[in-house]
Length: 153
Image 1 (spheres, rainbow, N blue to C red):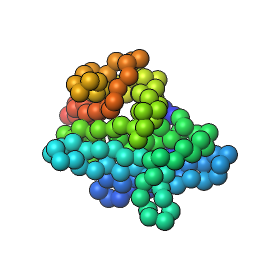
Image 2: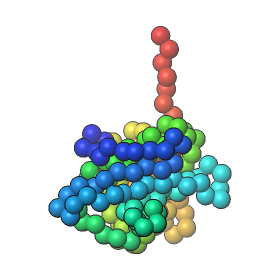
Image 3: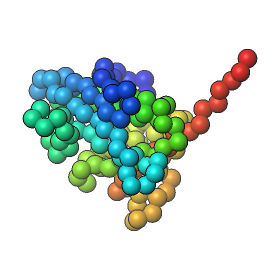
Image 4: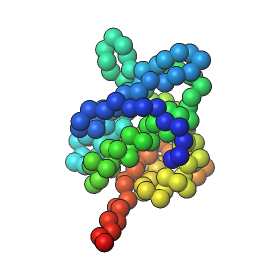
């Protein structure tokens, strides 16, 4: 996505990313973690404010720092970085609440034409995974990086 993004700090494994949201409510540390689930090759994407006491993600706080598009673009950039390093993985994302899951769907919908150039996107509805379609309410989302073709000269 060709949107402004925040500068990221990442661990070498590209499993954990940090950045600072800047807006009317000040500087808010954010954290993104990719964690392998009990299914091999399936990673969960967790995102939220970084709890300054525990160092963990707090995904229940509503920051409203006026920079949601920049935050979304930053999170998506970590998905690219993570799947560059781990190209065969699937990444699962869902909101901590129904309204957050709806916000994720709206973000995917808004940039779907661009996202689908590089990723297969699926939505979970009624315990079934299906190809993502705009305007359908989903319980979770799954992304799989499309293979890139390398050209030899």
